[in-house]
Image (cartoon, rainbow, N blue to C red; front, side):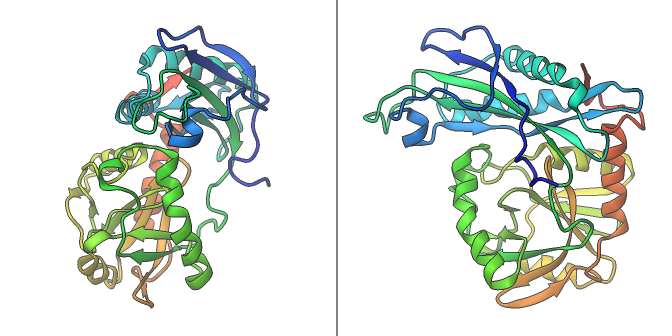
Length: 330
């Protein structure tokens, strides 16, 4: 199977802001875009994106999961990056239009259609390092996908690092620069420790990996960092915590230190997981800290992680009632 996110549908939805107003969205070829070499995005990283999915249900219908939440986060990212503002209705219609256009190509579960809205600054101006772009482009790519982690159901290996994923005031922006800053330490961790991801723990504060939020599951309690500006406010994180409460679990959003994490991880029934649109809920089996390996519980994927993931999948796949109104039927 092709690597996750490497296959694209041949067309995308696109709209442009000319400095005064947004033009009409249109369906365009997805194989290329026209961009000046001096475009603001290429020099000053004026870009943000989202990741969400559409799912095929057993009756043949297609539904998009938590579209409104993703659009609101992208509006926030655009504002914090001083990109031109856009109306939620514009992006919502673009997403619906392109998913409807390729509804027949949405895979059956466990596959899905990954949706990648992207906003880039297009003004050709290399003298605007301290000034926002006046023009921009919104586009929505589609990519049929399977599982994000090729490792399947095995427990992931995380290297704990005493560094931040990105600048603290940039954490809740879903921007390419934040992902780029995590790439080098992640590649080093893979080469030296055969780690799958780096768990960033600046000053001993357990935060997130380069591409997912971190959740610790100790018995009937989920512990994860409380929302602040230093890390990404994951939509899947919010979903999992909501479902955990529905199942009667205790949810603790608070500071989690490296010391407490390793202490709790040593307990036999403890689990840990990474949450994200791509990863869904992936079990963590091993933590690597200061050259030493620590098993999380017994080191194998746990039953609570599997139950939460299945509960989420059942809603996404239309197998159980969508009591929170998270699905948008197209």
